[in-house]
Every structure is written in C-alpha cells, then in structure tokens.
Amino acid sequence: MTTADLPALNALFNSLVTALLVAGFVFIRRENIPAHKSCMLAAFGVSCLFLISYVTYHALHGSTRFTHPGAVRYVYFFVLITHVILAAAIVPLVLITLTHALRGRIENHRRLARWTWPLWLYVSVTGVTVYLMLYRLFPAAGRSDAL
Image 1: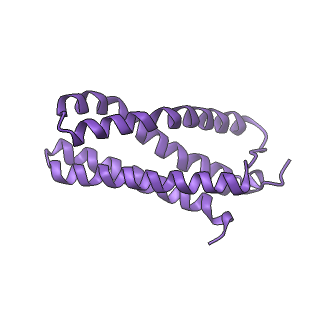
Image 2 (image 1 turned 90 degrees about the vertical axis):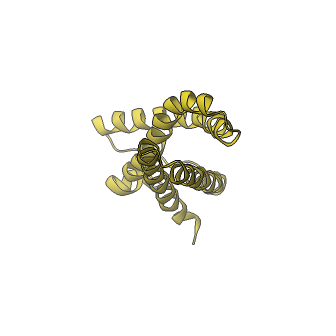
C-alpha cells in the first residue's frame, strides 16, 4: 500500500461507517440494544481508523485540487465545505454521545444522538461523495499536478 491508496481506503472507511450507522439505527428502532451498541462502537472504531489514515495522507501528500470547470465545481465545493465544517463538529458530538451511553445516561444519550446520528451520517456519506468527485467521476481534476 502506498500513499496514493489512502484516499480509496478513506472512502472505504467512510462507507463502512455509513453502513454501521444505518445498521445501528435499525437495531435501536427494533430495540436490539446489544446489536445497536456493537454497530455504534464499530462505527466509532472505523472512524478512528479513518482519522488516522486521513491525517497520514494529508501529512504526506498535502491537498488535492479540484479543477473541473462549470457547475459541478460549485456542487463539489458546497459538499466539501459542509463536509469539513460538520466533520470538525462531529468529533466532540460523537465523543459526548458515546460517553453518555457508556456511563448509562441514556436520556442524555438519546437527546444528543438525535443530532449526532444524522450529522455523522451526513459526514460519512459526503466523505465518500468528495472522494468519488475528486478521484473517480472527474479523475483528471483530482490529480495533484492538475492546475
């Protein structure tokens, strides 16, 4: 594995987080608390792996420019900007929500999870979207040497 493989790995991690979040939601709706807990802890673990990989990639590679012209550029930057802002906000939200659950403060956990879950889901889905737009849908636009 090289540095060039890390964006795809990051997208895979985000995809796994998305699947785990959806499964965790289904399990809690069915009142299957052990399965919900397993999914949410796994989503947290995969998110930690993502963060390590993401920081490693950007420390070694730097930024990749999106240079595709036209309306898609505005769509890309809207998705990217909302993703980045919410990704920064989701870290403390997930930590606090998880702490409430693990300490048995279920009402506090539920109240905060109503905000945390959809934001976390949005961040994981838009993470994959940014990857697809930057490296797959418009691959020449995603090259680091593209100006």
